[in-house]
Length: 518
Image (tube, rainbow, N blue to C red):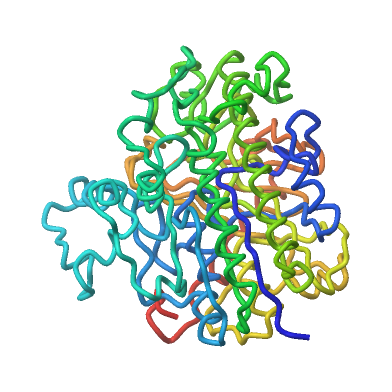
């Protein structure tokens, strides 16, 4: 049998329970539900970092952000970094990326870093001898100004059709596609052109663009085209079909805008968490509940805001589901479905009402750190696994399924043994990192968080804070009782602290090469 093709379908900021197969009875995801029914579904899939850019770079490299260097949004993945896509390409695979990559900077975070930390911080220090502009290929404004030419090897991708940013704010090659379809982005992009805006939060709005010009339609159309063009190829292929939705802003177009009634949205059971034992930054958020802005940081919201945001996000999810249906149909129609591995996942989650919060940053509750994860394809039986897996595992698994050698320094594990036997446990715990530029913790330092999660417990340590997180998940699966200061949790605190330390030591880079290259 020839080596399989691989279709990696990714959504953005998508919780596993915002799918039908994840237990949600309101949102309509018939395509994903059908895909899950014929896949191995991993119920305990966690991120290495609950932010877009660091975790997407971890997926690509199989390495933790502290090792590959993209520790937070705004640090481009080093051009020399090894990736599983590079390995596929070097072994004869055609490789394509359609949609969101976010391996480089969307905006001006490097300039922000220079302003905040060191006025002498030079571009030469950032570029490290690499060609000028190497880290500006995904810059939002650059794509609005010009048609950006990509190299023939973009972190291993030989074909790139990029989408930058989210919702109705998208840029990238998508802008040129709008132009080819007779549309000027200036007339349809952003809140200033919206057809309708929810008064409780400007991030919830109906765009003026029709469904056929929305970024989801672009990713679907271009992915279908790429798959159809591969039908006669002798070489196997890998395609990352990467939707920028349902990440905020929540801007589903056309019929998807009012497909769901806000009144029908279920309020999460933890929505009214008083946070009396939470870390100070979460307590402060409760004091400004309902005061929402357009920044991407964690917020506390009221019930009306939650209901409208959730209804809009569900519309965006259903539109993505409809798009995925067309992509999968193109596999069937082109005769490639029987030899294609299909993986579905997301880069991270979203609090989305849990504990009265929405979005992400500075919170490692389950809603942010767990993602949907399914694998189907030739020789893979449908089933469900409770094995603890991580975003780092994706690349190693694909290389293993494609019979392509991995590379020294990857910190992931192949899931192929679990595909053969779902009862296998690959690990006992998972380390999760988060670094930030802005001091959202009011800790007086550039924020750092480290989490260890097991089947039974979660510990999260915040740099330079006195109060941290400790949850007994066996007895408190909803994470409502922070036991950090509880005298009866001393042994659990000691055990989890020791395991966190051990995991951080174990996941330092083992490579003899510079960490970002290995």
